[in-house]
View 1 (tube, rainbow, N blue to C red):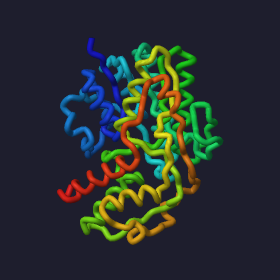
View 2 (cartoon, rainbow, N blue to C red; view 1 turned 60 degrees about the vertical axis):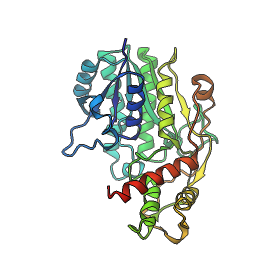
View 3 (cartoon, rainbow, N blue to C red; view 1 turned 90 degrees about the vertical axis):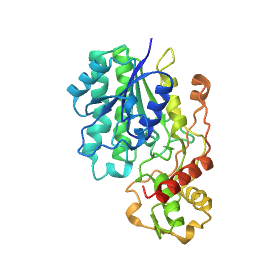
Length: 322
């Protein structure tokens, strides 16, 4: 029997890699599509015709009920969110409605229509925020430092609550920063990769940055979506930290990106207070031992390889004028 999966946020970075992965495994993939005047299918253009599209919105329960009725999914992957941390300060209410309450809406739709479906919630390392221990693992207390982190924390706990209250197969993946050439331009990794490429090609003169000392645990999104799938193949639902187990500063990111194109980042980077967060998360470092042991998951792409992959992709895109 062919399995079916419903993915929210399918046109985003993670959704596109997950859709690819599931299609390779012969799943019937349904993608929730939010109505916009100018739809963006860039990440899924190559597989767009293989996805069954359903119109819906995480803030509208009735549309989610219809989506679950139509897709009758074996697995639901809730990746949709207002996912840019910096935007969550000027837009805290929208972030809460989509990133927090949207999870409840999706869980409720599954509970009403297809309670046997396995559910994956995209939790985030931003929930750890002002970290209480290093490295961070599944039992580390949360202390979010942004409206985004707080919203993700609600989404995480409501998923646990539905698992315990309604005996649903509901898992959360606490994913640390994961990047790729498909990452949105507003994220620091893509911002740096694209700037290095554009400066090399003579299309840009400088790069304005915030805190270069912030430390993150960065991995490749293509590796991380495999962990999502593995969580839903287990006999019992649980929550897992997914991370590289390494930490790197933003300065290291700059070093690798600019070195790849033969430039010194110090000649082009300007510190701009506009990009410093109101409350900074200084250090994130994940302990993914549980995922390795129980899921058999492993990281395949290292940090240097990831950054160079992103710069190479942006060199090609900018050279073509796209």
